[in-house]
Image (cartoon, rainbow, N blue to C red; front, side):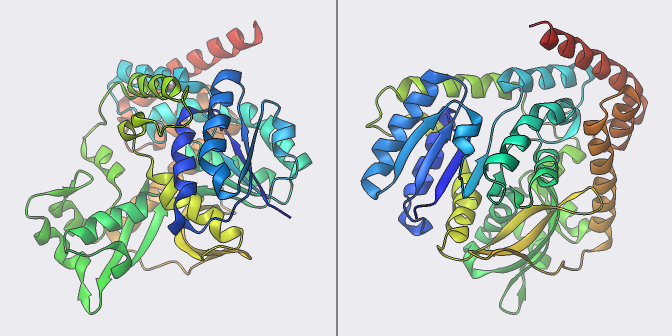
Length: 401
């Protein structure tokens, strides 16, 4: 029987990058039935036509569904990537952070908390449909804030994991400084999504992690320089730069909205790969989603990092082996003290965020902001008050529709 692979958020023009990743012969994905789910008919129809044109000759069948239950019915693997709140929600998060002069990112910090606080109700219907229509499916989450969304899914269904390509991409960038590929080095990693550390990097007998600060010669990996790497005894992911006072570039939502519109126009012609895909690299498909999909459905065994929900209400990012029998986490590595102290702080913040997700009241929002390393302590109270007010205003507007 041909497995059914359902993509929630499959009407997004950005899903064209997933189609291209599925076509890669090195990925080892066997032909399946691809079901694209989306709420808006025109983008969904164009994505269906594109996917059918690109994957049909390889033996895939493709259909589109606007009804969630129909899309999930009988799925073996579900890729969960809806943007709850849409690009407008991301823009609101950016505007909120700009009011207080703090970094705005969709998966970390106050902008992510703003999105996360509305996830519980928004994802309840998805969770109900998953339990009813495909309770044994593997659910692969790409929706941000990734840790929160993964936790909510894992509470609903037994086989939910989060995906992120950042650890392996960070290792690849570090290995390149030594003229090596990621496949030529041995490495170990510990952390939470977007907030983790490569704690070992070796090539044979060489300790590349110890050599890395000098090798960078004043350069950086993801904005993190050699002095910080040496002090930590570990290589952090690029989002560590937020803790060093390096905010992301503003206006990301507006930029992505423009790229999305251009891709949608290009998809009028399903015979051509959209040139606009180059304007937003999406390595999470080729480096995470597709290898996991292939491994779970009988393809090559995958060795990568996954986000797994633990008993302490924290989603940990761990190295794991994935095959058709499931996910097999590796033992956790030793973590240098300086990096371990950051991880302890990140975990406490994650717990506070999850409490706010379940109860988005002003006191819970305040707790999450107090625990957030990027929020100045003197600002948390004012931000919590403003955020609670904003969320209540949006709730009332939604009820009144």
